[in-house]
Image (cartoon, rainbow, N blue to C red; front, side, top):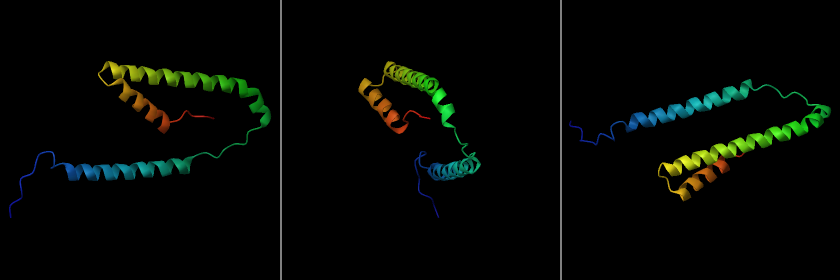
Length: 104
């Protein structure tokens, strides 16, 4: 029995599908392992948090500022490489929606 001729791009498709499936399973197993190993939360006294609040606010503001600078730099580099400014803005907006700033 003869096999039909197929394009070279079609030949690795089954292997790529299996690779993607097993990579997803591996990520799921790694995630569940991290959940199992997560340390238990320690109680926080309110006296400590009241004293640390101004320092924590400053730290969060600095982190937000650095994140904004990194995103603007990446956007400007993408535009310089030929990406439409409107598309770059949409990509940055989608990133911000999917990855909101971390709050403690």
